[in-house]
Image (cartoon, rainbow, N blue to C red; front, side, top):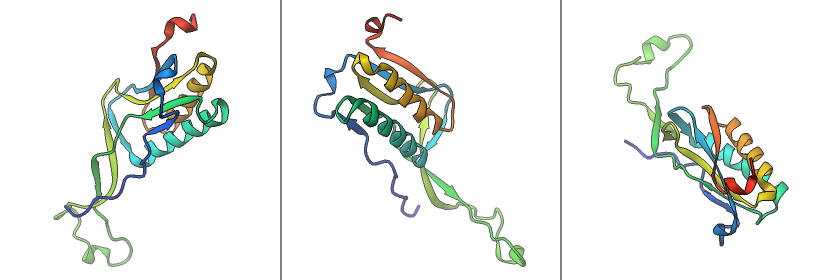
Length: 153
C-alpha cells in the first residue's frame, strides 16, 4: 500500500507532565461499545478536554493522557460522478482504494482519555471528559479509577 496519512493527534500528554503522580484523583473516559475512532475525532476530543481543563484548573492543575493511537488505515474507492461516469469508472472492480484517514480500534470498556486532578477540580475534570465524549462517535462513560474514598460519594 502507498503511504499513509499523518495522524492529526500528535500530543498525548498534557498538563503537569513532569509530576503526574502528585494528583489524588484519577478519572477515565471509557467506551461503552466497540468501534473505531478516527484521528480527527481523537484530536477534537483531546482539544476540547484540554482547553476546558486549562481554563478552569490552570495550566499545571491537572494531568491528561490520550490513551489511543490511530493505527488502522482507512481507504476510500473514489467514484466518478456526472455525465459519462459509467464509461470512466470501474465500479467495484479492483476497488482497493486510496488511504484517506487513520483510525484507532476501541474495545468495549477500553479507556480513551485519563485525567488526574486534585479533589477541588473533580467536577471540572468530569465536565471536561463529558465534552470530550461529545466529540466521539460512540457512547462513553466516566469512571473514577483512583481516589473514590476522598470524594465521599
